[in-house]
Image (cartoon, rainbow, N blue to C red; front, side, top):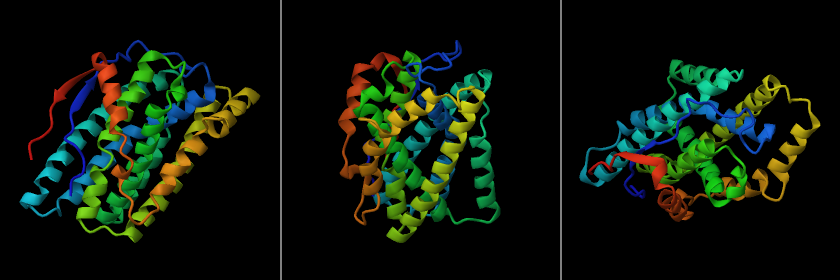
Length: 283
């Protein structure tokens, strides 16, 4: 099975070496530190996505019907590796601003523990599939509701939307591999429960830590912004509930929600913000 279109690996033409404002998202500390927390998870997280997909793909039969999926997996790896490098640069600037990336250690320790206990490749893949669905849901919101990044520093607005485009493009790759290898509904739900629990705990912990080091944790305006961000007219809770609940359906597939036009529109409108460094792999 391979329901994804061929993927391109792109270089983001954004210079983060000059730094960016502490409150880069419209001057709002909570929103800024929430997105910063997500960035802090990506270098370790993206590498685990790559590793789990590669490890599981070793069981993929070497037959003609799987050649397209194998090629798309290589494209997926290329995109995720690029995301990891860009967020490394982003996170280096956050460190200069006095923030401490605990999420990378929490995730790293959890991954190491899984390897120590020889967690099966399909279990790791199920968790990756779940987290890929979450990132795809967030990517859709970022592209579909541009007001979520209104007032953001231009280079970071570009970074997050470029990342959203590529998460949209490859959102079904890990899922298709899981399905092709015989992954069932129970395993998918178990992976989802594990992934959402740890994601929620780590995102909350890292955001609070960021706000603490930013010295805005106890300011009323911080939590007023948090309430608006999650429960306002375009609140994250309302916007994400449908996509996240859709994953619970037995017949779920990522491309049941076909939003490729959002990615294609951004790529067309902002073609000067990236360069293609590798085209799709041949099947």
